[in-house]
Amino acid sequence: EVQLVESGGALVQPGGSLRLSCVASEFTFSAFWMNWVRQAPGKGLEWVASIKQDGSDKYYVDSVKGRFTISRDNAKNSLYLQMNSLRAEDTATYYCARGRNIEDYWGQGTLVTVSS
Amino acid sequence: DVHMTQSPSSLSASVGDRVTITCRASQSIRNFLAWYQQKPGKAPKRLIYAASSLQSGVPSRFSGSASGTEFTLTISSLQPEDFATYYCLQHNSYPYTFGQGTKLEIK
View 1: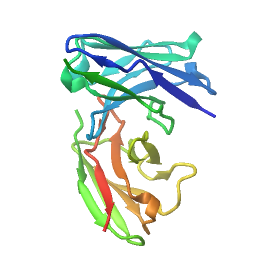
View 2: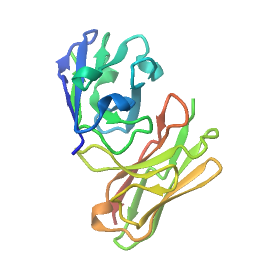
View 3: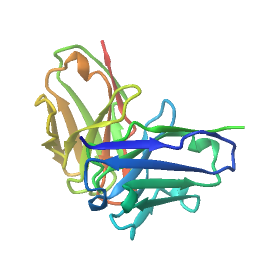
């Protein structure tokens, strides 16, 4: 069964940094685009970033450009989101999701709280 | 950027009702539109892809349609497990954008 498991969420102060991870299993990770999608508490879904199979193409929502970096390690079946200069408005549950079309495989999410 | 306008934002309905949720794109997105269902505390679940194709394992009471830049999700006969929040997503161009969501509640 396809699995995506996120980790790394935590309480962090404004201006701080955090690195999220998503480990994939039971599919050929290197064959798929991967994405991060977030959801602020009680709010809707927001696409954050996407990365091509080999990491050569990356896309970001404007609000995180220059602060967040999406990356992957295909040898470790892992997706990452390096988040710097965190703001209160980055507080959300972060999901990783498979596929260029954001298919039907999502992780369970990891909560990032930015607060002093 | 493509803006997705989803309506209504909330909807009260009864078991057995037929309901329709609409998303309108600010520009052409061809058929690169998906619908998701989300229940509290859970990850979203894709119901429809390519505007009108039913995701494997999703009941046939769910259907999607498109007319130009207007996309519709229809639930033909609501079941108790359908009360949830629904989102559309355009993935024609980056940045991908979701609709604001429709919370479907029991009347």
